[in-house]
Length: 300
Ligand code: PBE
Image (cartoon, rainbow, N blue to C red; front, side, top):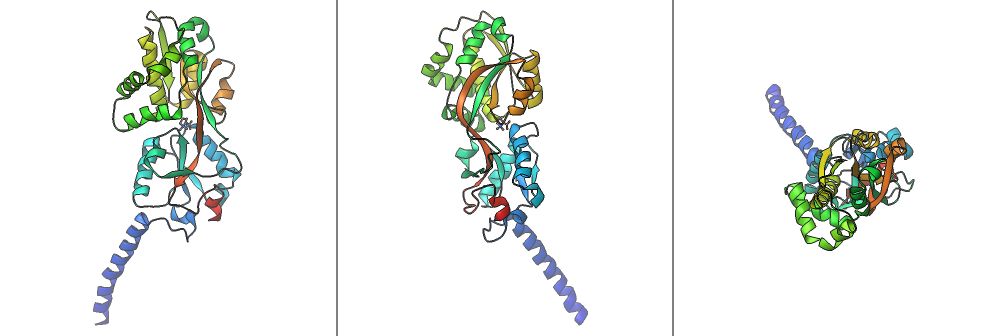
């Protein structure tokens, strides 16, 4: 009899264990419990070459998160945003590497965490960088590149399209058509290209896909012959430094791409700022009301 009872209890126990396990996978954020154990002390990151990953490694030691079991998970922007989407759907806790301009801030209720130790820097600018000899080799294209500038909201317009599945070249074309005034400021005084080649390089982050496609199409509309090539961050900087690529519009400075900038500053030409007011940091969903600063990751 006793044995029979036990046999009945075992499956019940199993079921309840499985249920609790499932529950913890989809458990919403609990502000009354410490945050760390709720997400296995993990910050969800992106590709290893991104400057935001280097800054976050620094934050891990400065705050000090690493000494308190925190770690940074490397993945990709696509994997990070899909993890974020699931978390937001179930109001689960999550900490991500976040930046603006990016559609994640439009699509999800996100907030940046305060960075009292200023690891990520204040506002960033996105710069246009060319190979040192490019200005002489192709002054027309250089002029256009140095006159290229737009706002975070312009860039987001293109990004939202590509995020909705529109081909980047088509999204760029549509945006150019809708913004002739701004585009005219970039092309002002720029001579015709007569088929002169321009090799642009970029990292396939959504923001850079947007800007690179837009600039390439404007160059082509003036008769330049522009090719765009995506690569990892390190080879991208190296190719502009060596001159195997002419230019990139994707240098986040002074902080995020700062390590590469310092490394290659003698071989490159900073053609100016193309976007003001970019921002990089750690972000959490707004429903994590009591988590507002990087310090809170340890304290709350
Ligand atoms: N980002 C987007 C890049 C620059 C553009 C913030 C992910 C980074 O290097 O971190």
